[in-house]
Length: 218
Ligand code: AMP
Image (cartoon, rainbow, N blue to C red; front, top):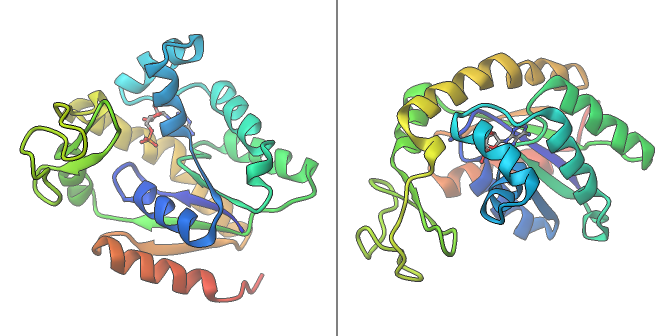
């Protein structure tokens, strides 16, 4: 199964991608996670990406396309994969189609997770994460039992720099301008499914599995 999870930042596509990857035993590829790893490792790619990410802007297409191309070539993707947060622009979607075409493959489904703007801002501004083990929390919806420390490893939790108010506004603007056009792009290919991401995690996941179980009509 080859899937793309599409949606604005904060719709919960990363959480759903984690669950679906376990369920279908396929690889999850999150460009956000790959880029954050590169920033942590202070690689040259990470240094280039950091500035864009901190401001809530997109990292240049050439950088992320290269990253994804490399990951898709890995044998662990042979059974299928979920792309979380990629593509985010039309040139990225074109590049993805080209990579798949070269391997005689096609995308099965693109899931568009929908959540209201107010809910997105509420989710992102309350998000906290552990810089050591990467566990994520939410001040209101999923607080750490250890207060401001990570439940798993005791490290002090931090707010992602791009989850601060100004960066959130920028990310939502960037989504509308550069990523939302992909809805139409994939609708035309008849592989798009819309899903309400505003419900609680397990309910969204149930709906996701049900939608994917329905045979494709295209
Ligand atoms: P995410 O965790 O998916 O919200 O991504 C965090 C940040 O990483 C984004 O705000 C962008 O700066 C960068 N990023 C992630 N995926 C992409 C992509 N496909 N194209 C460009 N930038 C990306």
